[in-house]
Length: 481
Picture 1 (cartoon, rainbow, N blue to C red):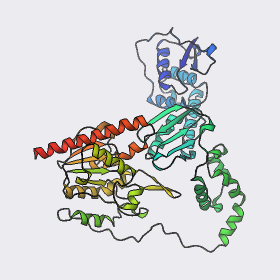
Picture 2 (cartoon, helix red, strand yellow):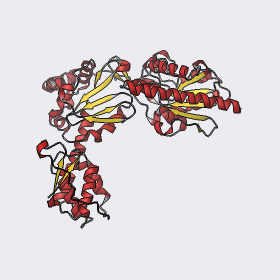
Picture 3 (cartoon, helix red, strand yellow):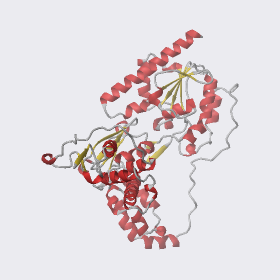
Picture 4 (cartoon, rainbow, N blue to C red):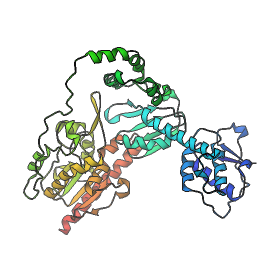
């Protein structure tokens, strides 16, 4: 009997290497036992199998099997490694086996993969973050108990959905963390380590109660989509029992009540969008005035005002951020909040006078998610970035800087007109189509979100180095002119 010990419950690459070696050595599935390191008591821990030799050669299996195996291996079924190897062994002799849906092995592995995907969907739907700390030091933490080993699979969804807030999702198996830059996975924790109720949950319960429609209540359907096992994670769960019990009475009250006027979502009267500015004659003041009435995307409806760029009309350096934050939205000026203070300090260390720099944002309206009195920053979408790009282009044509520094992913997408990773494009000047040189760096708010002081110090130094490079490029271009 060959005993294969994998490094973890989700060690797909380890399983794949072992399965390939076993198959090339002609080891039948009945001759293999699969274990996971640490699952057995130390006294009985199996020694690594050293009897197998790496055999030269290869064989092919359908790409569909690899995709199926990568998901099915996340299932909690302890026999999954053996099931997958048995299916792999059989596929060598029957390449079309996966097309036989009635085959017991194919049906079981497919059902396991489907269960994992369903659990991933539940995690996406029922994770609820609680705020720990306040403002620039806040961190959002959630507790979840998945049925299967899906934390790494589900984490990228949250990184995309909540890109601009640092968060952690704690589970008994593993914990996922997002620092605004990368996902990290650590060991699982107990339920006691998750935070208790935060200050926003009463506001959320009030909102949930206000939107609950008793006339459309279908208890069985609700419990099918939101099983009771997840209710403990949901702040609104404490209301569900009473809302269901009173649904019939509340429905009658709704029917008997006089209809209300529909709520108007827009804060202010929608005015016609002015014609496109003529950048050859319009000054920055005229551009600012016209941008104030921009209606090309929905963000203007909830924002306080347009936050246009500021600085000299003929600045050599233009800094482009992502979008205004809460403080900027209220003040109507770019970079006046915590990120602005961080930027001011870095500019000073790099030897750049902020008064000589034109500073703007890719998106001119604040996009946020309301949480009581707090407005949580939300990443602008591509249509919103593209709708607002006209104003950046006209600022660029009017100011005519020699160098543009794009700070953060949204700014990079605006400046270059396409999505580009920040990390892979930092530290070098790129000449744009109009001859302007562009430089990529991180956004100052990224530095504020880093929870580790050592990482914050290191990344801040890199940010200052990027600005020093900007000063050097700017000086070189001035001398060349």
